[in-house]
Length: 623
View 1: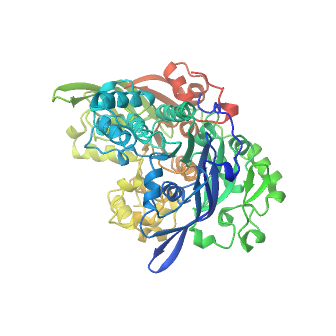
View 2 (view 1 turned 90 degrees about the vertical axis):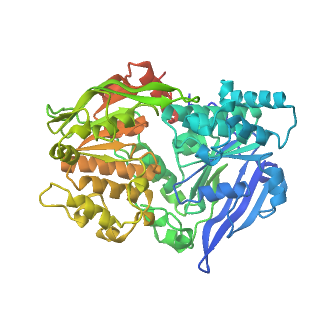
View 3 (view 1 turned 45 degrees about the horizontal axis):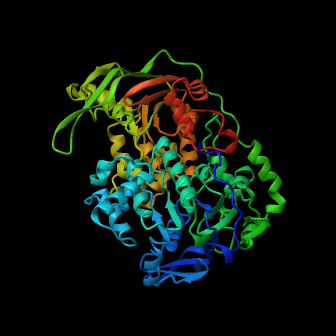
């Protein structure tokens, strides 16, 4: 089970014995004649057969570190320090040396397999092309080898050889990407957020596959992730990266029990809890640029334990115990407080138990069938929804969970008129409809004023050419609220200052863009927000802030939510009731505490068992 630490812990190897060692790595860019720091003095190592995680928020420098470790730094960037592989020094700029190492010794798996796989080339050909760089064989031998490689990553259907990447699910594409990355039998695999874009079950399968491949090949692994739960479930040691600098390094078991840096503690306290509803403690503020905190503790601007000594100089990255490193100037002084906060900080939040008899929305017997074209042009029918019924009460938050392809988003799109159901009906604000397009103009406006959507990716849902103020002004212009909300009022409502009105989406962080998207949806004073995976693309700390925002808005505005997510830990925090959707069918529903605490359906139990979580919680729910 993911989360149970099936892989034995490995003590960090001395640098002289490490498979890969990085010493004092600095990466700089030059913009408008000014040198800007991306990474500063990063040192780490990975031993043969060891799994190491590099954890941090967006902007911490994880992706650039990944590029440096495979010799793929973009033009215009300079690097200093040293990288050694098997004891031999590796030049940052030697293309010949990296050509020998990349793929054969060190290989890379990316978050989005579409960036690794050519969409116009069949999967088998892509694996074969990589394999032939180090091996020879006849055509039948090559095909047999490709089939074997696919089977190694859990794809037993040999027909996958002839398929294109776009014909596969996200999890299948990730497996094909792994097969291609491993085709030359490297000794070190670097996996950059390999499961972030996947639903919880597929994520668990991919993480389990990484562990299996590591064991069977006696291979080392560097896992890049922003999710400490994933790091604890998969790796032996964890390095915590922040603003281009390492703040902590420790055995995974030690760090999950007692972090030795306030930032690591903040990440842990930001995680949504699967077992109970708690107050989430997102870290205030955002990751600074490394140059802005060059001469101080980089976490000082966001740390509640900050003191003058933290601002006076940059604390050294010091070994405080065997294998435990921290860059906290006050660690000896505040360590008891860190431990106490870890044990007692999060307060349990009482679930809302009363249900309103008034329904904000009601869905009855909803069915949706799509016509899908096969490989040879033949048409087949795919049932996305099969008689789904649910309701959301006044000021109630209802969760809808299931794997990718279960029909969650299709249901939401039917509700707001972006899809037309095959059968069934919906009731919103007294308007009963199946085909949204057949409603009168007045009825459509009434439905839209009562129901709004918040999408997963706020950047794609906001016009990049328009300022925040223009976007909110346009939304408020069609509002039926009296008085019409001002741009400043909407921004204040979601925790942003009025100065954000002058900015464009590209100048905002992911969390800020999501706040703007929420403000836009609130401009028409809706009764219900459909939240379709609204925090799945965010760092854990920003996710905590946005979830707390949703909870505050619900209390202040008496909003109702239909909260769609594949993350059951998130659903635990925001939903009073939950519906579990499998292949278009509601297989279980009820109060969140009951469904997640005592699941009755095997599918619900399998979803719960797939959630990466801490060792002490991993045995609570058995599939």
